[in-house]
Image (tube, rainbow, N blue to C red; front, side, top):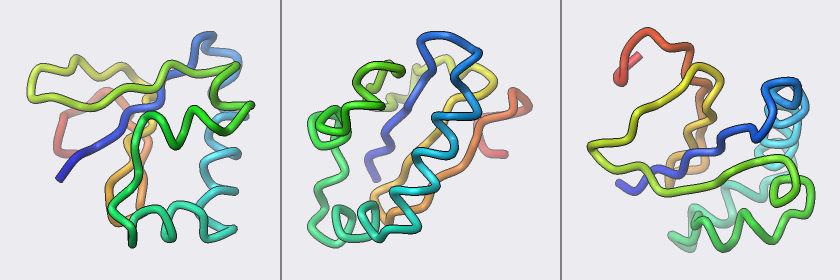
Length: 88
């Protein structure tokens, strides 16, 4: 399953990014994209706030997550990485 990582360009923007992603989920946007198997970097970069405030990339097995990274899964769910472990 492809996972997309959203990383704040500036740590001060972490709370706003989290609210933005929560809004995408609440509005059904993540679910709709997931049903089309289309949660991609390109789709998320179409959101102006994310494009301006975040670095968005695909997770690989070698990704070094940072505390505060938002991990978005193809099923439309997401979680915030807190720095404890990759599988938290």
